[in-house]
Length: 290
Image (cartoon, rainbow, N blue to C red; front, side, top):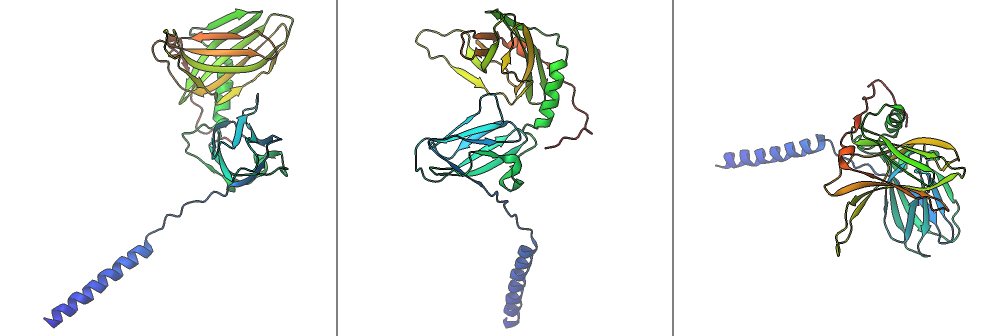
């Protein structure tokens, strides 16, 4: 009996030893740490952060930080303090090249830098996200193709105040839709573009019923214009995440004039959206730089 017990004890110790060896030989998963970039902002001045690609997402750790994309520049984020002497917080920015950029935000009355270029940093403050996210190089190539491609689908246009505004091409590739717009100024007064916005809206608003609308934010704008000179025309392509329109709703494309009243809106129905032309897939041997 003593011999049997001794064998059992020895076997138990060998079993524990085997578990320990297996545990040591198994690879450990080490989480990758992203070193956040220190950033100082103030209440009385605006800090501009310039990214190499368009901004597609911004998350503030606190409402004490005011953030907005610069008008006419999709890759510039403007930051300002909502109040002075707020506690330390953070900021996360996702860009169209598939990068997540991390920042630690602190308040200071006099920031040492007001204009910061992310191109000048190394990659320790950012990581590449899933390839399912937008690749800016690809988007630029597809948008350029959409700009010059033939389109046989239905076109939507509106004319007012000597301004011809039209949607003359809808294209699709993977998860992105490319809207080709043309602005023609037949007047002698230049048209300064203040805003170009996209909404999905209710066709009719019933009495005592709140109207619902969803704004669509562009991922990329190719051949973007800020001014249409008199007696001239320009086409541009706006890339957005693919969508369709529910029943009793429509896509509103709004064009606003800066310091003027020549505002124009296009109404696009779902049967126009669903007839988008497919852009040919890029060759696999094409290389992109980031």
